[in-house]
Image (tube, rainbow, N blue to C red; front, side, top):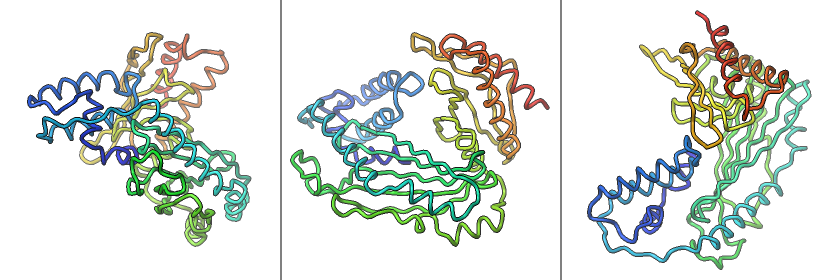
Length: 356
C-alpha cells in the first residue's frame, strides 16, 4: 500500500512522459503494446523495480481512460529532478535523525523485560520518477538475543502533495510539508501483536521528539505480557515470524512470495500461499537463480514441497534456511559460483523437514 501511495495522483503529462508520448493515441492498442514492452524491461523478476512497475501501471490505467489527443507537456530536466529528489530525501532523513533517539527507545522498552535488548535501524530511499514523489522508509527493530521478543517500528515519510507551491523548484525547505506515519507492533511468542498506527504532517521547524510511551503504550504491553500473547496463528504471524525472526529478505505480492535466504538477490525461493476448502497452505516448487547475464534460471526441486500455515511449519522453514546458511559458511560456498550446489542442498533439507 505504501508504494501505491507514491503514484496514486499521477497526472496526464506525467503518464505521457512515462510512455514517451506527446499525446494520447486514438488507437488504444498502441498503449497496450507500449505497456507490454515497458513491463518486460522493468518487471522486478527481470531486474527492474517495484516502484517503476507501479508507475508504469498507473500511467497505463490513466491513459486508457483519457480521450485527450492533443495534450502536450514540457519535458522535465531529468538531472535537475534527480538532484531535487536527493535533496528532498536527505531532508527527510535529517528530520528523522533529529527526532529519533536509539538510547531513549531502548531505555523505555527495557522496563518491560529483564533480557538485554539490541537495536537495528534500516532506512530505504524511494527516489521516485518525480522528485515530489520521493519518500523514505525507516525500519527500527528492538530485540532480545534469540529474537523471540521483538519491538518493531516502521516510519514512512513522504512529500505532501498539498504543500503550497507544489512543483515550484524555488519553494523554501521550511515551507514544504511532509506526511509522517508510524506503525508499531510486537513479535512475542511467535505472534504479531499490532499496537499503533499514527499519521500526521510535519514541517521543518515544527518537529517534535517521539514519545515512545505513546507509540508503545505501557497498558497494552503489560496486558500482552501478562496474557502470554497467545492467540491463533495467522497469515500475518507466519509472514512476520519468517521475515523478522528468520531475518529473511523478501518481496511479497499478495500470495506470491520471493524469499532471499542469503545476502544476495541472485538466488530466491518462490513461496506460494494457496487455500483448499478455506484451509491455507504453502507450496515451494524450486529456486530461481540469476546468472551472470542477468537471466533467470529455474532449479526445480525433486518434489513439490507443501506445508500448512502453522507456527511449527514456519519455524521448520526458518530452520531449513539457517542450516543452508551454515552449510554455505562451512564449505565456503559462493552464491555466484556454487548456486546449483546450494539449491540441491536446500532441496534435500526441505524434503527431510516436510516429509509426510
